[in-house]
Length: 374
Image (cartoon, rainbow, N blue to C red; front, side):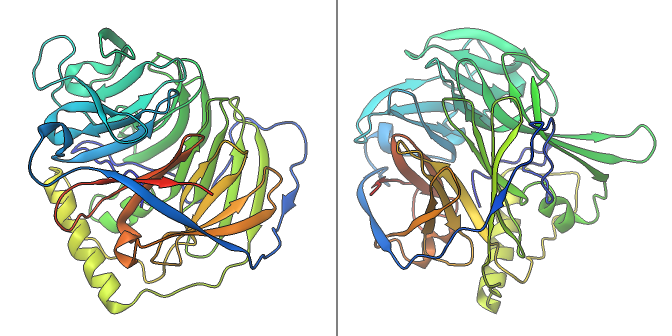
């Protein structure tokens, strides 16, 4: 479960069956990585966040975390109506935005991305759409207007671009859910569609709606414009890489045994999901979520400075990652030390600067963990 952001008017995430929009014009070989017995440890070296004390280190409702091109850590706190910036070691640097309706202020921050040129884009439909800020936190205006159905779950890419998903309900004939993942460059329309999916809109089947949007794919984007994706499937372990133009450059699969959820897992997931959606103000649908009986094969994806792809296993409760090279060969497996099974709710961000995570279901208070990659 990764960066789960949901507005009252928008359901998010991706397609269950991945289809590339705009092929590369050549055959893409599929490789099945060889198994390896090598397993290394990932150490938690620091954290950001306290229950009480300095307001620069207390979080109300974390919605997204991301590294910037400078290695600083950016945290979108929806409850505080602001974006907080920390050094790679977790030291507070600055705060961007505050609650209000004036220029540079925020009313409904739903997503954010740190662009390749160092600027910050914050999606706030009540403030016109995509609000851009300089690296120093100065408001630069609205670069793309969105009042309804804005792009969500943004991931900073190269130059002035970000990758995001968008969900629209169309009512021309029969109500239809239209889901897309695209590349945005300071324009309401994406320059590239990586995925498109359409299916009948049925507000009474809330679980199916979530599984075909919110829980269907994970993705990340690097500063060269590449996009890494893995579908959230209980049957298939698939990894895909696209270039900035939407061409599929790598695809591989791995054979993994299915794992059934325990009764306690299902009960806790249902309780947490329904309470969490209510807390976000979801309305217009019947909130009755029935968890699927099996765990996902994968649940997170990222990349690092050594051109390695990191894929989190969804079949294990503890954070365990399979690490591949850019040809799809399995290099080693890595496990986060001391995280425990409660980390199944952790949302990971992995890029060339390292690994950070926060819990979508914190036991006491919001905290960000900083980890050191092997």
